Image (tube, rainbow, N blue to C red; front, side, top):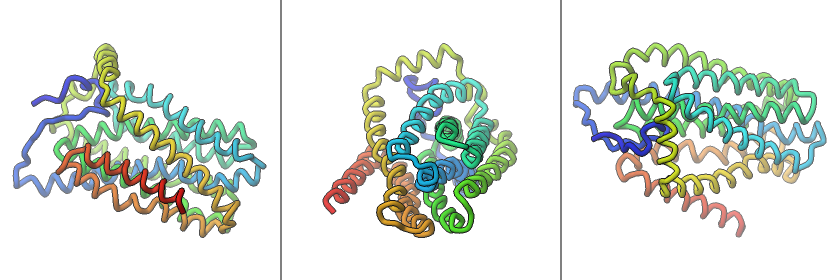
Amino acid sequence: MKAASLTRPFLFLRVSIEVRPIKKKNVGEVVMKVYTVGGLVGLGHGATHWIIGAFYFLLPFIADDLNLSYIEAGAFATIFQIASFSANIISGPVVDMTGRRVLWQAASLLIGTAALFFVSEAAGYIGLVIAMVFIGATNNLWHPAAISYLSNRFRDQRGLVLSLHALGANIGDAVAPLLLGPVLLIITWRETAAWASLPPVIVAIALILFLKRSQKQEAKSAITSKESKVSGSDYIDGLKALLKNKLVLILCVMSGFRNMAQQGLLVFLPLYLLNDMQLSPEMMGVALFAFQGAGILAAPIAGGWSDKVGRRPVVMSGFGVDHGDFIGSDIT
């Protein structure tokens, strides 16, 4: 059966109902590819979250050094989301119409790396705002390229491979403060930001070298050049059809509320730990690692579960846990 035509032009959003049984003799090879390619792309996803995680971890020290108010500090999250939204409008069509998914993944990491390094050189608030614009653009330039690449290459293991992708993000969010905390005890926040810009470069090089080499294998798989690219008119038709899908719009709104709450925690929790609880940078890193660490285990479990029971039960369970956490934290 062919994938629903409703979202055909949106390869990074497409949900396929196609079932392709794997021959037993190829199961081991497929599993190896899922974990190798999915793990590497997940590492790249982790690098994008390392960039924003490093900035949010350094934010209390930046605010203290530059005498920023909580409003000015919180504005970074708004700038980040606006930049992400704007980049997503452009990056989705560009990725679909060019089909250069590996290239855009690498470009995303390099842009984020340059922005984080610029943070270390920024003379004032305006410079940090400019850097945050590019960090936000990096985040959503990555997703259309990476998700469409994995979804099309591993159609029958989509839940598992996308859970590896999500796992990488959780690792990046958790490891950044844990590793940068002790570093910040030795050097300044500017020097820490400069050193923190190195890992994404290494990951970008690894993506280009490994995934480009595997492009020939991808060309022999179910993805054809015709499926990999779409025309501008097809994309516009798909967008019109997508906007008429109430279920997709409801899911987007729900995701927006969840993201709003998450961004509030990411920005203000480090400020609270430093200014109110007066933790050292090292202990702040441990606390933020604990905050993000649960996702490291939850992502692959949820991915495998979704392949068996479907996506809806997993999504609703996730929202239920999130709401329970916020209600419980408010009571305590």
